[in-house]
Amino acid sequence: MILKMRNEGFSYNAIADFLNKNGFKTPRGKLFRNAHAHSILKKKNIRDERLEREYPVVIENFDLVYE
Image 1 (cartoon, rainbow, N blue to C red):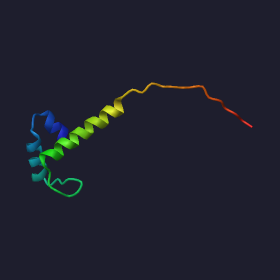
Image 2: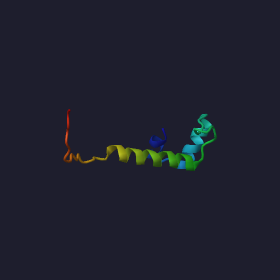
Image 3: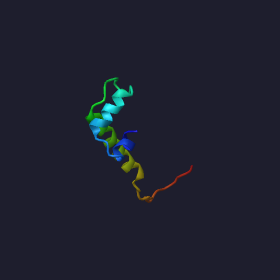
Image 4: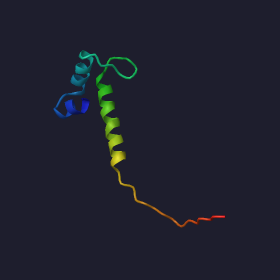
């Protein structure tokens, strides 16, 4: 919801006001502030970037000993 509102041009302050008016609370049960909305989006962007990153496959020399 926060991402959708931000993409529609809402400010972080307007997003926080909307969330508070509709009864949403932060994970700690507090009212939203603009910094909370910004932090949530920032963490989502970091997580998305990490999940979409391609890591090269590296297989090094190894021995398999079966006795």
